[in-house]
Length: 218
Image (cartoon, rainbow, N blue to C red; front, side, top):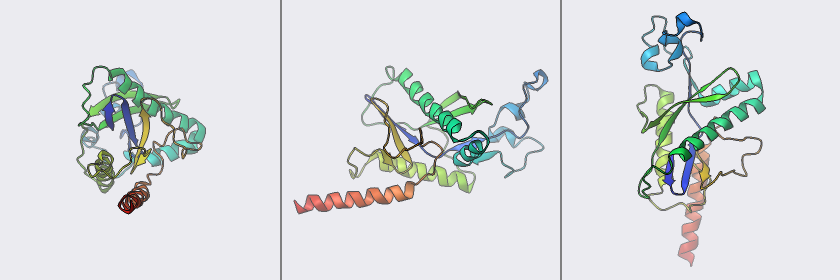
């Protein structure tokens, strides 16, 4: 989520989905035209005669990250997810000068990335105003939570201080320059980590209430 292009201010949501094809990946020439191998869109995959809903074509990003860690180790996977974060920042920096900055606007972007056998991420596409249609309970939970956090981040009720590095499931990753939270520890990116949005929102609410009480006392 971008709240400003000048200075460039970027928040990255912790949760997401990992999508898989219904058929095993292949680089054989006779398989190049097989959309069931190379395209993971649900609209395409569900037309496969072998498709069965709930067979694992879509995982939570956290489940994917934990699985990759079990195969490749935490250091390599953390580096891969950090590179996805850097890829997002670099893509936004590349268009910063041509985007009209309006302090009264914001944009939620959806990023599609492919992770190859060496854990290197490749940018597939960037969607402005991505689809928020939910067709499963997990879809609804992620998208409803993300929208709720986006509204909190916009601070329409003026409850935030402007110094928060996390709002719900959104982490501040860039604000005129890279941002690193003291809470990161060994993690180079919170992408795919446990989304503690509800706990964090309660903490924000307590801080806002304390600030109001202090202001009224003065």
